[in-house]
Image (cartoon, rainbow, N blue to C red; front, side, top):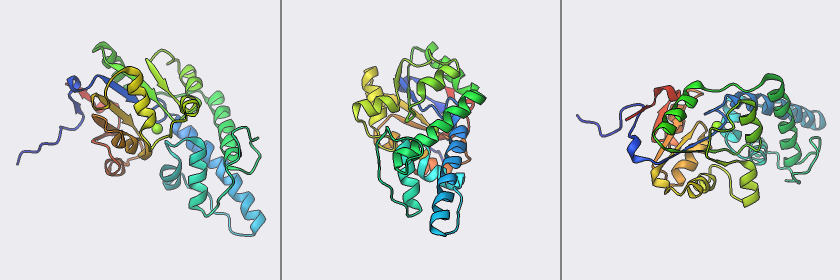
Length: 254
Ligand SMILES: [Mg+2]
């Protein structure tokens, strides 16, 4: 029987003019730093709620709760989504809320300050194969953008010495300024293709998060490439990835 599915890891380069890369977990290993900062933030808060209500303290589990409710989403939406899964509905608050204010924004801001602290202490690790692939794409004259929910994109890229890697950046600050809904909505990826002047069907979305591959599918992009850092190949396929690899070293441009 002849299969019509593409061979694992082979991408027909001539079909696409632009590549849109997620940042955390695709280019940089910051997903782990994010997960740790989220765990500390939520555990402190859940402990606080447990003390107040005499209900048992049930810690935040990175697997599955981080991946199901938080990973890849804009910060405040991640807070709201996880807390609701635990039956906690907080007021949204204001992005200017201090990190000790009991609102969605306050808790998100607490996480952000912990994240920046860890970043400064430990630096940023990169995925070398991702940088190598981007180099090969540049050599072929392809357009390359970064599309991330992170409002720390500039800080992360500077810390990793990657400030010149991307022609176009759409990050959490761009999304807030232009009022673009975050992943799993496709709008931030569509803003990147629009800025590059490339139609979505001629663009590849590269994502490690469920919300991210879902955004790629929703936007009608030419190829949604999932990077299964968490051994979650099936989940990425189910949510819209056309092709899934464990690392971009497995990708061959044809
Ligand atoms: Mg990611």
